[in-house]
Length: 567
Ligand code: ADP
Ligand code: MG
Image (tube, rainbow, N blue to C red; front, side, top):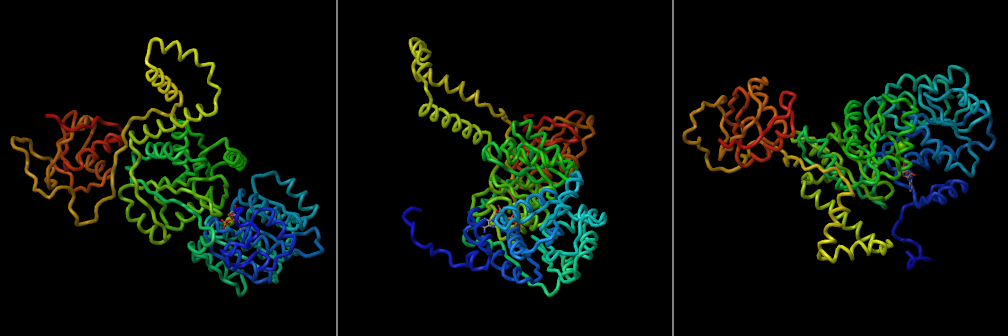
């Protein structure tokens, strides 16, 4: 850096904020915030917006949409500002209302802009008083905005600009009618701005109803990365369903994220995973739509304050959240749409910072992952879940690092007498080994020695699995197979410690095997169900994988003993 001082950085040839024609007060605020240059959506959106054009903007999460609309809104505030608001920003959630109004407040510092967040779940009294004393920009959730309009407390007759931020999300949350009603209260001459990370067709209809001759801007993800490309390492782990929470714990142990968000599909999953992770020693917090606003605030506070390291959330609850410290995004499931994946991983790698995106994929989710790679233009490396050996190596490495740190910085003399007395009796190396053992054990970490099954994606149709050598039924095997299918190649017989007594049927075993491994029904050979146990034949090449997978899964609601049959 110092060598370049005094020289103009010629690496970026894009426009500066100054080139976009922003007021000096805004430029000063941006400099103070350390914003060096506008992002692509800002470069394209700010000039038409400051001119007063309507605009329809689409860009992924984390591309700087907030400043793209906030700066022009502030730029256009009239010199004479009355008590009624000049601009209204509508956002889907309370968190976003707070976040966006903080951004407006920061950018508008030198303009003395009065910004008020307004949302449900908070006492209405204070919001009413603030509105009475006069505001310039109101940032509101649609429900509360409409409530205040209907009470006559929020007067929209002066509004020159309306922004719909995260418009796709507002539609998903069922706010379409509220939006129509609110917009109807604003002057027809107003400027209308719509920003969204995705552009579903329903959004087009909304835009047609309320926007006039809008400028349309779409920023592709790759373009958004230009200049200061976010470096997001994207990895997927193939994990059988039953082993997912264990695998996640293992992966987090190895990754040791500073702050991570784990996305789940449902509230129930959020709650149960949060519990599991807490049991594993993580400080995990749940965030979902079923929580009260107060609870959600508290959770966000703990994550920002560093007293929680993991946020377990549904998409809706987390949409649009901007958490600076975030280092990892985890998809506990493969998202069902590529857009959701892009949304989620947009939480890390912001403003050029490094980030990690991790996806847990079940064997049958191969195709979805491929689609995401194609649509999102992402490159997702499929990796193996860390083994017990990896984990142990990692823990030893942490212990070694801690000892080294202590040797370099700690005052250790008062322990000398201990080492000296012990060295009368033992070799110094042995004393050191014992001390390391104690330090290592004191370092904690769950002692989880369960191996997580290593599975892979299902091979494509038509490719045969394992050895090509034709299989032969074992001599002397006089027990008739319960199913006709036979795996090709050498087979292994597995013992499963549950049988007819437990209500096990062949389909339960086939289902468990195909659900948790890369095998198909055709790969599973003879199955015998006995009173108290069952025997099942699988390709020798997959036998260990199947044993591990079946151990980790529930059959008929129970865990069964599973091993290679020794008979
Ligand atoms: P979006 O609404 O597109 O998801 P945000 O507006 O929340 O994205 O911006 C993401 C992050 O990038 C925020 O932390 C914001 O402060 C930062 N940011 C926005 N514009 C710039 C810029 N021009 N330079 C540096 N950081 C920026
Ligand atoms: Mg945003």
